[in-house]
Length: 228
Image 1: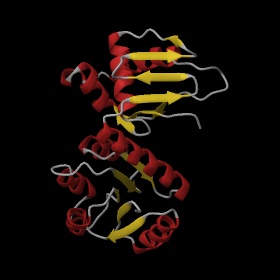
Image 2 (image 1 turned 60 degrees about the horizontal axis):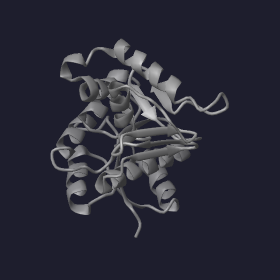
Image 3 (image 1 turned 90 degrees about the horizontal axis):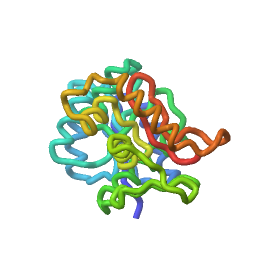
Image 4 (image 1 turned 135 degrees about the horizontal axis):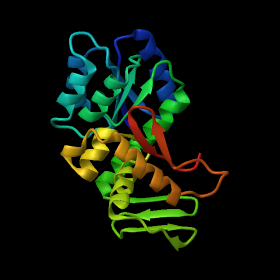
């Protein structure tokens, strides 16, 4: 059975581009042009993933995210022309899973969708492992190995890695990481977080020819990725 996508955008040309592109990729696509319509369709059509523009008439996309998160865990990917970091951070902190800037390529969007759907499936099955090349992380067993050898992490470094593993492929904001690992009193300690990310990267280095597993989303947060 095809996975269902709810695409929400007030620009008809965007929907005319998205629907055939996503259908060709094997998805069942329904569309809406307003926030109210998005909320109604999300409740009645049970989409597997939602693509949501922020600049909607009558109801801002961030309000739609907040309303959806009152009752739904459906992955939400924001698609927006808003280039202010504060807008992206607010959407992610409200519960969006990822964002893609307009204009975007369908290949990138499909990759982000696959990552969000994998994450949702992992959450449903409580899978908390990550493997990339010869690096393996098992959150439940509290183990990290690189090339078969154990990697020694401090408790905070492991907690930091754990939140990234649980959100593999998704961007996690500074605020989300700091709140989860150090508590709400440390939500502004971004420089402190950078130090720990640097330490973690050093311990997870797999060689000069492979990309960093922990990627920086400038001004927003970090994303754990596999081999590309």
